[in-house]
Length: 107
Image (cartoon, rainbow, N blue to C red; front, side, top):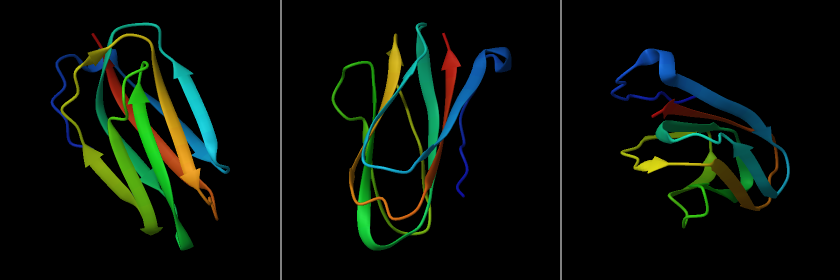
């Protein structure tokens, strides 16, 4: 598992989304408030084929792409402020569950 380093202006506004990806496709989380992504952590194991995971807020282009071949990945972000939802899209073969945590701050 990775870690997230972020500057938080008000800890009472920090929240997270967690879940498990078991198949290729799209997962949407509606936040319906202005928010800033502080960090994303994916953790999983792919022994044969990499699974490509993309995270995009609202309906913007993909913000980050993560390729799994081995054990986990994490990334700190400098995110602009978004308004509606977080979309996680997966392509490739998901061999085993991939766990994710997205930490965000309401603005």
